[in-house]
Length: 288
Length: 212
Image: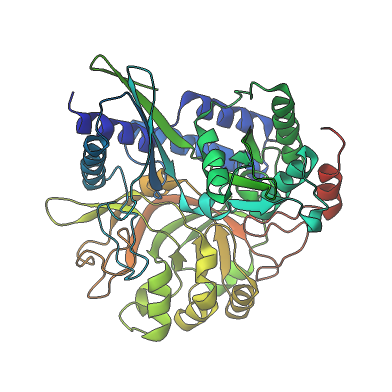
């Protein structure tokens, strides 16, 4: 199949449907909430919304987000070809109402109308040693992006030092600050270390992990579980109406840092956690 | 569940309590940043009738234009309300609006305006775009003008004013009432637009827990 067409299908899948791991986490959250509580009704509305969007093949949220692509490609492939295919697919997806035009020129205030602009869609390219190509996309909603944040350790207001205990305090603080405004229950990606840019990048890339997929390092895996449980004790709940589920999962990842800097970036994504992946191998396209 | 249909009386709004769930039907007007600025800067008359007793919905929907030129909503959930904080109270009072629908809650100025003029803030379910659009069976026929110029794509033009959309809710729409004593109040135990009161001691306890 033509690359543009495959990418269009990838975008469509991301906009109108959730991955099974996310939907299951939402169902679990619904089951946890008490009958008659606002949180229960919010979760019910969310689940009905997910089913309706899938059935009617239209975007589950009107904010179809910023288009962020991650491409891993073998030697010999052209980045230009990928970019062209993605731009064409984005234009077509917008015309088909899978996407809302979300690219606004910050100087003139004009919306490009087709999701194309400077660094928009944003594409992360990565050449790898495998023979296949993997294209992943994230539709990152604006409301949840606005509550993402970056700290540097030490952080005196929380008495947070340069260790995992300090990181833990920051993650809790970020979720408290976000309240329901990121469209809770959210998923939290945390990038520990790196420069400012790398720390944010790492935090966001964690969103491609499956819900419940723990970090291979036991120390980080244990902290993920601990944070998930602790954050859900905050009681912020779905949309901030109070309830048992404030986050669906927490993903941590670490990278080396400069001796003088200790950045911790925390990315938040809303419950409408739209990310999909496709792999092209021997001309065959498979979606996940 | 309380049922409200636009146009809504001031008394109906003042009878509501915080945390009430409301099933809303009727016509509401969508608008985001540019619409609010425009409503205050230009004070247009043509929209007064649509707004009176109705609600303003913070929403930038995905829309489509059909072959006959009519528009319909594809996805129409709420957007973050706090961006309209500078204008909201004045818009509510100037146009006798009875409700603001959005997500994330608003600030003190809006709370005071709502209380003074007899309106409430309704918190819809963010991300529930399809839910909103599924119940919206059309936009007021003939009201829609050209493609939007100012405030993003979802905002439809009505007459020659870009950015104002008329969403006709012919079925029910669930909104969470966010309303304390006739206005928004930030206090514990009162659901405040997505800002659930978290006990500071609990936060501290969790942050200082010795589990790692």
